[in-house]
Image (tube, rainbow, N blue to C red; front, side):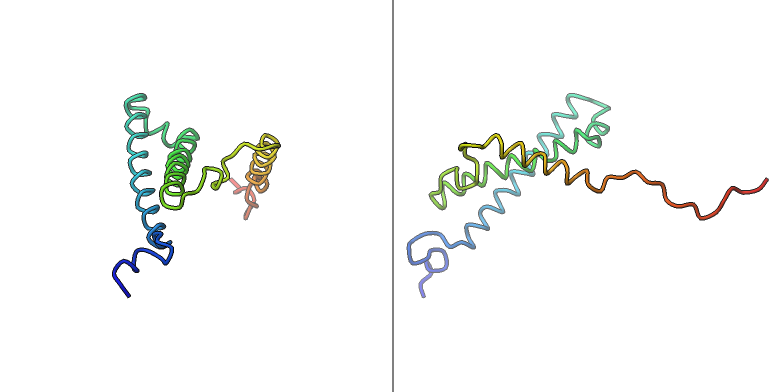
Length: 131
């Protein structure tokens, strides 16, 4: 076994473990940088109200985008550079019926989030306290 066999397989491509490690490290740093940029922009835009914005529903949306955008870009780049895959390999391609699939998936996702959303008060353990 030669030293290059640790990094390359028989086809001369980088082994999958190294590809995953490269993806994970790049994704970690991309998310870290994205998070710091978003927090800096929100703090510069909203000043003293920044913490309130970051803890609101908008903060939740920003957090989702901070995770989604770097994962998509790094996934596409690693697929293209390390594995020679087209962008379609991530499932990001327009095809016949893509709008229907998007709307149906969004509807199912929204319904699954709202499925157990019931506002019920806990049962009373005792009656009123007599005065």
